[in-house]
Length: 238
Image (tube, rainbow, N blue to C red; front, side, top):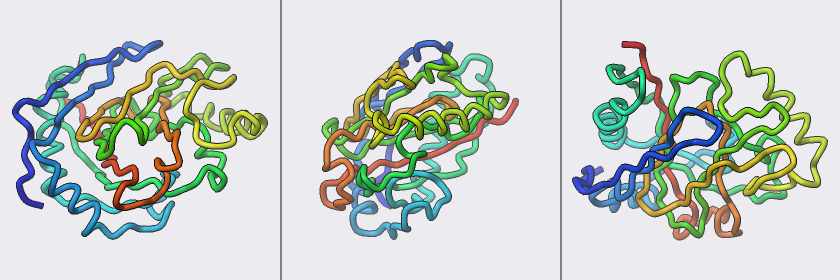
């Protein structure tokens, strides 16, 4: 993967997440050039079947090359961790980075894929979404689970996930595809639009989901489909 460089003119925006004391970080023009990343996505990546990575991601994925992971880690360590209150001196480990292409039509979704999710119930875990498509293919939203008035799930809240699943199953008329707006169970409290070469970083224990509002969003088309790079990091105590 050649010519992979941070854009020296990238822009970092901190956005407050309602009902929490946390921020999401939106980084525009992350890479100086995304050409090598797009070449990998369209011509080199070997996409494994849906669920092959033991996740509910509604599409296909492959691991990103090490040069990208090293660049992402250095940026997170140097530019974002110093902004995290109480974690300014911490060290991060990126333990997974996946090129991802949505392929699953709404009619084939499992119940778990029709609702917001968390990547972890630990506040030390962070999620990254690097959009490789534009606003029209959908960004990411953060939600509040209305019955429990909760946006951020910690380890003691893990039991709530079963309640959510049962509630979504019982309200299948409202949750019959990708969640893209508020429902009687979930309030969309923050919507982040996709933008090509935009990186978004947030705690992985926040309820979140992708905004897949058009058929092209889940077409699985390697020429024009919804590519993103999804990465996960753990922050170690100093």
